[in-house]
Structures are given as C-alpha cells and as structure tokens.
Image 1 (tube, rainbow, N blue to C red):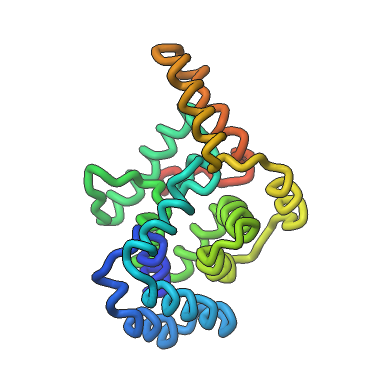
Image 2: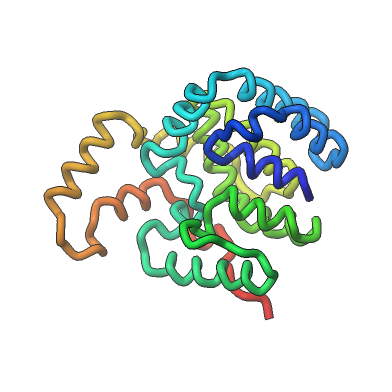
Length: 231
C-alpha cells in the first residue's frame, strides 16, 4: 500500500529531496485511491502547503510539533508503556516481526517510530496493514486529537490513517481527556522536567520524572494489542 509510504514520508523530518517532488506524492495517492476523496484532498493540500514552505521553516515547525515534550512523540510505545520495562520487550517483539518479514532496520532507528512502522506496513498485504493500524488506532486517535487541539496541519495525516480502520473508541472521551491535559511543550514545562532530572540524577530509573511525564499522557496498555511474533 504505497499510500502508507507517502504518509510515512510526510511524518518524517522534512527533507528537501521529497519536498521537491510533491506532484509525485500526490499522484501515488490519487492512483491508489485507498483514502476517501475528502481525506485525499486534505493530504494533497498538506503536501502542497509543505512544499511551498521554506525548508528551514518546515523543519522548525516539525521540531516544534513532535520534538518538544512527550505527548506528541512519534514513538508508539511511548504512549502505551512510558519508561516501563514492558516497553523493551514490546520493542524486541516488533523488531522480530520486521526481521522475520525481511524488513531491515538500521541501528539508529527504533522499531516503534511511526514513520518506520508505516514504511513496514506499506510493504505488507493491504489487509494485514489495516489490521496492524487497527491495533494502534487508540494511539493514533490520541495523537490526532492533540494535534487538532493545537491546530496543527499534521492532524490531517492522522485523519487519513484513521480513515483506513474501524474505530472502536469513545472519541468524546478522548477529547475530554486531551482538553484536561496540561501542555508539556511550554518553556516552563520543559524547564521543570530538566530541573527534576538534574535533581534526581543517578536515582532509581523506576522513579525518574520522565516516566511520570510519559504516563500522564499515556493510553491504557489494555487498549492496544501487544506486539508479538506470529507463530
């Protein structure tokens, strides 16, 4: 499903190489036509807007969106396990899935990084890819809602992903949860995290503030299917 490869590219740090070929990305979406027309139109507008931006501005917007705080992290397991030990096993399980299906991951890439996950799914049969997206739809909804609250144009990419799966979630409850969250990307919030980490340097990792910050913005583990190797 090449549409997932396009969405994967759009969720990566903006790169001049693909920003110079927006028409090719749009053509893939239109030819495959797996997204509903309204979603394709929204993604097409996103691509055109991004391609029209100065590369430095596009990269700055990306960093401000996804790299400040944990609530919009593109590491899927961040929103399920936080810093718990279960996250490590889930990473191993997912990496094993990649390996068994001939998908190579470089040493500096984490298996739960959403763009990497989507690139893997783009190489799998459509039915399997949709099933995997269904497994993580709770996380995708959470990210989409937070992006919507912040009026980020990146929300349309999550709208597109979610249009491929059947939602089994109370959207109003998620919106209430997000509305009640304290933003973790403000200068004050970031300074507080750094101050707490400095004070607790060398302490037991189980008590580190990063774990508490991650868990504050997490979805219940039971809401997401555990990644395990298929027998």
